[in-house]
Length: 140
Image (cartoon, rainbow, N blue to C red; front, side, top):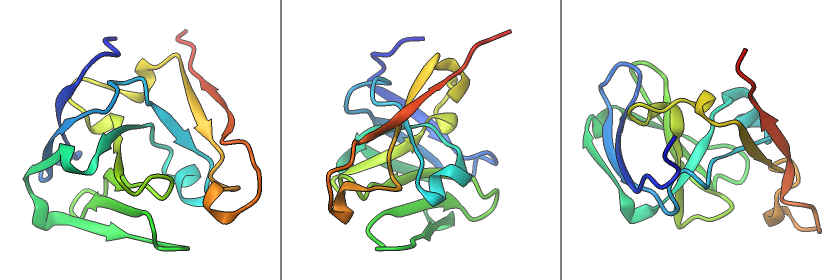
């Protein structure tokens, strides 16, 4: 897998929503989160600046979900339900982009992925470690 990918196309499951993205540091920013929403969503996300994602098709089909502080904005296809990207609470100047939506990539391409501690989010105060653990995948 080429961790240095800088630009790539992506789409939701049904292909209604399509986009082009320039990543901030290739695939090196891959991570998951253990907050209540991300635990259920289960996606691996990589980083892009807000100006570096361009919806090329289906922008009208994107739906928005927010909860809690309503700082993060989670976007998903209103037809197939697949999460494509979200504006981060930890850095509102960035999007997290669902790796599974990127052409030719899968979350199972990563041997390990950092899991951030979203339960004890730094924006909630206190001194908590940002990393909760590592998620490892071993092929059989």
